Length: 200
Image (cartoon, rainbow, N blue to C red; front, side, top):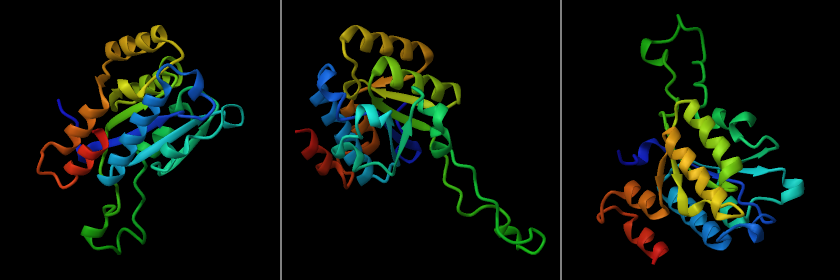
């Protein structure tokens, strides 16, 4: 199964300034997250960010936060425990007016967002906040795609253990380039040259 552009959302977990120096391959991981955010914005894929205890760990890195529609501030390790699910799957608004007075075509919510159930997720630490958020997303019946080269922990063992557990739970493990090329699908896509310029 390939990623569908029209069904995707991007979640960028806890790329906070004070975490960067302690993370394995931190600069490259942050750079890949920024690439995903740039392409997602060009393709109108909703991008959401999270920060864990920002008073202690700092704000979301500006090169990543600039691409996010909203940033969820949390203390729980799983962003789903703090309301992320409500952003990813908003309740449709009820139609205005008396239902009996509305023409039939107006009785359904015309402004309801299309379902975007494919969640592309990346972040840190892979074995803590990313893992717990992704497992809760799977539990909530989202299709979860973990971008491995945009995820990190303080050490390789914890990071890789998270990937093993996520794969076992049903998440798809992908890379930054896999996501980009699956969203575009063709060298004829209008944003192909933009994407090519980012990854060269």
